[in-house]
Image 1 (tube, one colour):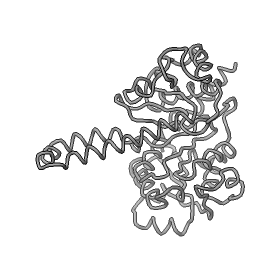
Image 2 (tube, rainbow, N blue to C red; image 1 turned 180 degrees about the vertical axis):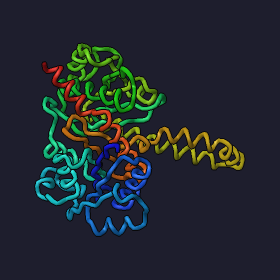
Image 3 (cartoon, rainbow, N blue to C red; image 1 turned 90 degrees about the vertical axis):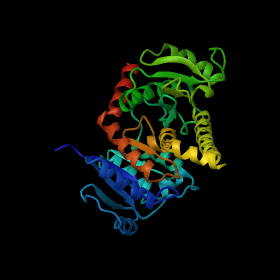
Image 4 (cartoon, rainbow, N blue to C red; image 1 turned 45 degrees about the vertical axis):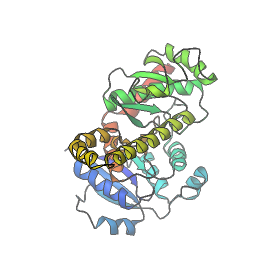
Length: 337
């Protein structure tokens, strides 16, 4: 019998908890027969909501946690104070080997702090980055870092590039992924102090395929597979990406409803357009893993619906099967040696 991959899910985190979280968990379990999901949170509430669904009982188990870390709470203080919160309880399961991965739509700060404090970093990893997949013309690219380290150093960015390359090759299946650093121009001498210091280090890095700088306008075209930056820049790119995508989709729908002719045209192109727009929906690609930890921690949007929760759980399966943490550990040891 195939080994079950165990995922602890924060049932109480996010704007749509616990309803959409539970729905996503059930959908993932139906799609992936070799997973076991632990729904961590207020037991009676979860049990009541689960009654609306049919599922294999050996695939979904409730783990009681009586507290919830709210979005506005100071992250480190909340992790230390609320020992019986859904985030802390689920992260401890990963630390203790009771779960292979953790997924949460809850407080980003608490997930990031808890990941480092409870699960811990792989030896040699200086800073764990958040790395979401973003849709592009050619498929997807990995944006690393998008929110964990706003004051990164050049050595951090080099590690981001190496970890991102491993992830893209073994989880997404991109052979010899192209790595680029976000810059304000293609020339090597351009950029701020961080970019100027990091650029030559990336050029010297033998285990990545570094192609130089990438300007923000070239990211949607898929000009690189791994896009390296510190978290302030990465977060701005991610939020602008999401906001612009939402506005464009809204404008297209609005334009199709302006006249009878456009409405008829909309009916004709609707199937093809729906498929195209689906490829640019960030929720299709799961959450952002916090790379470089001793276990897998995945942060999804606070507004996540069932679709993103489901895809994030399935993403954990690939991560585990491809032994990404072991590959990162080997890469760091080899580089240090």
